[in-house]
Image (cartoon, rainbow, N blue to C red):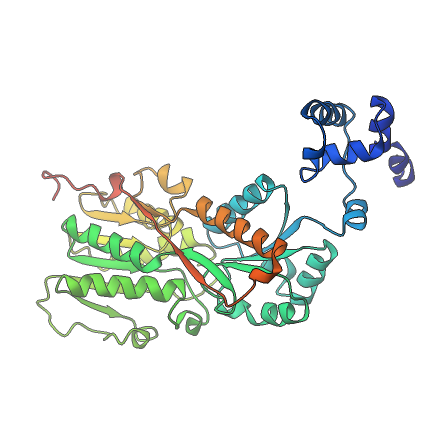
Length: 386
């Protein structure tokens, strides 16, 4: 069927009105959640059921022309490395739909970092606001310049946009709690496994999720009387040494940032390769791997499995984000739940407030969400397996 024929066969509001003997204005009100209150509930139900039966599909552009509103929100994110961003965008979409809005999501990598292309794409959908999800400081400048030219309300679902109102999990609290949990299980040699970063300078500022995780790890181990070291490329960001000053230190911590190479193509492979390198040097039990996300942790557990290292008796492992991967791992994974659905609902609700009440756009605030520690078998040492 040609495009012209499809257009002619499309069911319109006029067709619904004719079938029901109603005015077209009444049908339009029944199909618009913001005007349904003007009609009886019986009329609204009748129109909506008839629209579904006739397979009515609203014409978005016509709706924009009539009302001047698109009820469309943009979500800009970056994927390809680990699972959690997909979950966050899905949560945003669900929250937008619940609020009678639509979500247009685009990944930075889809456009090959062509910011102008991404921005034109969003403008083509007449988005009324934008959520920036999981973007760090390396990606913010082009978007701040874009918002200066197109003053749309925006929310950052990450810590990379100091200029915007933001919401993000309590990263320091999450990783301090995880480290304290490992210490409570008897671990005395603790490794913090991070994703590969390039350039490494991209993590070197307070507020960045990698920096905050490292800081929390350091504080928890020092509070327990231990020492922490890191490799020479990253140690200076936290003021750390590269070797232990006290060789008899009972509690020791290592911060690991693997090189950004083709082999580290995703967080699972990065966790596997980093853990393999550590474990081949010899396991000093009791040992812990505290991983920056569940994908890294599952990769690390796979490395331990290959070397016949038992979890949790010889090695305990934890992740972060509470993804299905961790829950379904061959040893169910201890993790921290960053309450992503709640953050997504908050971000969409707040963005809609800024869209519908422009006077609320003022100095940005940064909102931190709580978290939940989810303890599973991967860190449950028993008296018989100390």
